[in-house]
Image (cartoon, rainbow, N blue to C red; front, side):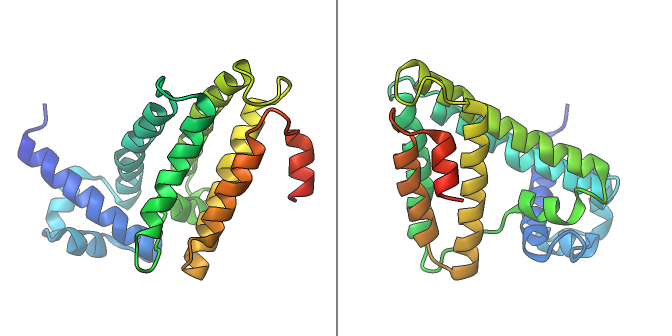
Length: 209
């Protein structure tokens, strides 16, 4: 088993290094920048990671395993109806960004996907696996909403989950470019319109393309 000290130092490197890489990009961040961000000697890096690629792979798991767990917990909350779970989850995220004086969002997985998905197969595969898992979690909640009559019976829940996930990522990008939560609020308004029994998902996509 890893000792607490070893685990804590590894986690520190992963947390601080991932922040640096999210801001500067994979190619713009070397091992030196990672260890400087973590405040450790460069030699310590190689006690935990075989290479910068290995660091990126471990950082993806370190950051997104707990996020996916929180996402699943929120969308599995039996005290709320499925539709409300989804809307509340995104509303809370938007409230978080709205509290910031200048909304900021540095997406580690987004940065890696743009730079490395085609150049490094292991990173590309791990990014895709995380994104697919997120879609699956949302699709399960949408299926429950469909069973309870909150959305149309013929809804393709997996396709709808993909659409919502992609729309959210696009809204985050617009927020980052414009330093405004307005795109996120538009996303939530449209999501509320989308998740109703009478909404035809296919027509909704065409009307909002």
